[in-house]
Image 1 (cartoon, rainbow, N blue to C red):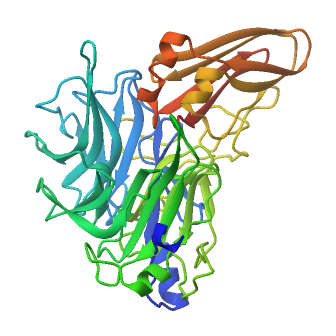
Image 2 (image 1 turned 30 degrees about the vertical axis):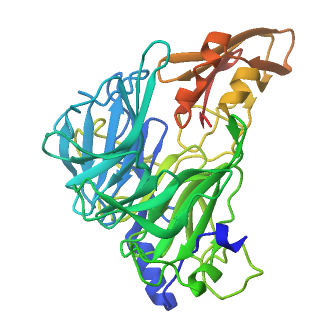
Length: 471
């Protein structure tokens, strides 16, 4: 079992040093169509982007080890990055490069370029993201995957790390998975060459789901998920130290210290802080942050002993990344009542909002980050993990309506409707519905895995929107 685990090394540090790191390291994430940044205890949160001012939606973001944040918004249903608006913010939350100057277009590609996972190098000058490029053909189409390497404020043909999937960053070098083997960029951040990282490969009957490392490569996180026929099981996240650093073979003691993060449900989007002291990930609870494990050699222990407990930052957030930032705690005192964040789409200086409301995953809804629903609205219960196979067979929903009337549920990825159903509620109370994709749509559901699924329920009392990552 231990050979399947990766482990995390935490250098010995006093309580004072840990507290200093906590004050500097903050987590960015996407929530409710906005880009947010928060302190690691979740006490202070700020919308960097504010709501989008147009039909473009803030959909994905990345943060460098030193606190720069880059994000993109695109028209729902149009996942091509070409021409879509982007924004970069500095470590203090000040807007940097704006609009189409942030990777204006991609050249040398055909078909849709679907960003899988974005990463930003220190200094905010270079970034990368995984892509999935499907070219239609008869009778068989072609699917090409890899990682684009780009500059932020200038536009040239991107370098291509072909077949390198699930990219992460170790300092300014890409780490990823190629053919089941973890690989490291030979030098960074624009060199299109990789080498194998010995000792790190995807176990048999598992699929990779993400890899990341500290800046020196001594702390590694590897997200994997068991393969179950055409579907897969809940993802897990394994951690391991590497005494020799980036690209080195783990020692026997390193392997002995391997452990699994105490995740809940399906876990992915793991990110390691540049100094290796903090871990962020996404699971059934939402965006989660915890202190790195405290290590002691024991072959009997497989669950990480965390240096600080896991904290749920947002029940509905996605794409968490860590960096040294002060953006969540700006010196400007917010006006009474807080705001929803300013400068949508990279406009003026953002304002700090009130702390978002949180609800238990699987209930509530609305666009307020962290979930939440207004009194009198219908209350919806849906699985925290939604798989493509569930939509193909029929995804059950329970709606508690305050009065009789028509209830309509629609599942979309961007502007594409994947499933829709309507049912009459004869009285107030619970109503069960099933969202099932048509046979034609069901055959294409795999293309939408990893994307944000928005389930909108219109019922007596109002409309509720719930977001889930489609697995």
